[in-house]
Image (cartoon, rainbow, N blue to C red; front, side, top):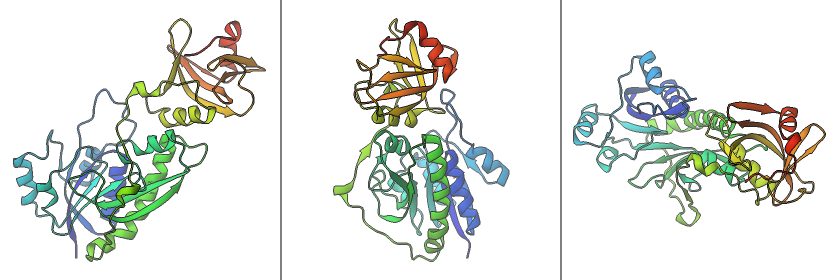
Length: 308
């Protein structure tokens, strides 16, 4: 039996979810997505383009919860509803439409890291593992019963984008396990433990400012959480010029003075942290991108300056 679904999707995770539905015999009646934000660095693939290639109707309303859109979705008579990285909450009216359930794919091991930007937040906070969770949707974000989870280890070298790619692959594996159960009406429904829940909000570019008084590992976690294609971690040179720190490696050796102090050793520049220090590997000052030994050359005449 082919199960008819209406899907709300965005980003590469949206495409991963949609591909999984088609592979597992679901009929996608329509896709709801977002218009691209011209101020956002869109490094990910377009759900709208994917839908056009599959000849699936695609819509991007400003507010899908308005009565006319709710009515149109009801007329589509979906058996199930899926949300894959769609950025807006769906109303209870929409969630009650599909008799087979409404499901959301979230980029963390719920109930931990509910909310926005879970991939970035797990790195900022130095987690050693994360994962993806498929759960039943309720009026409260990311709080519905868990259908299944897939764990993903976080490697020391991972940035937000490499971790996100791992999560997309994990999502495909998870969906392959769970979609047959959803089709047969036998999907698990495991209540979340509120006592274990944590919630994190969205992140803004200004959240990338480095506090050099923190430990080198903490600063490294911030850098890798927001490095390209995200807005980046940054500090300021003594005259107020912004310096982007796209990559730096933590070292346990003595920090070499006041936190934020730049020292040259051999052909590398290092910055003192509250604990340890960081070796600068990729930075940007204005339009000038500097890597490795180029950074040491830049700071050679101003060694001892303090970044703030």
